[in-house]
Image 1 (cartoon, rainbow, N blue to C red):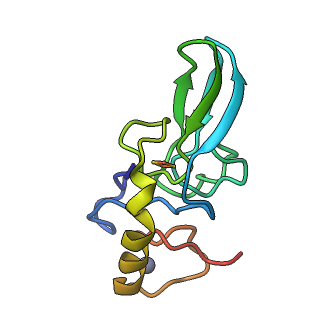
Image 2 (cartoon, protein in one colour; image 1 turned 90 degrees about the vertical axis):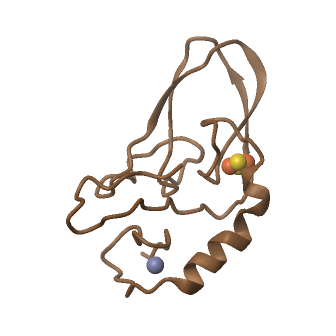
Length: 126
Ligand code: FES
Ligand SMILES: [Zn+2]
């Protein structure tokens, strides 16, 4: 998932979510029908795949998701690039190469006060 910047004067393109350390889905058990969850879209949450508020200061907002049915196990996307959030759709398989290429080709200067590079999705060490 990409987020559109709210400030189109300074950032004219989409920004990319960070990819958490794991390129793959989170296995979530025991969700009940009707339960409300906030799926992390920025990739910065430490409570993957759910939001922990880390998106604050970025253009990302968590996705509100209501569990549609009782199911003992869910594969929830943790790479943040799925096309059918919050479910894993297999996009993560080809993602490492794409992310590495984007970071290698990034023309921005990375500033440690920023959470996400608007061009490559890079995150600084805090
Ligand atoms: S973990 Fe994101 S598509 Fe599989
Ligand atoms: Zn960058």
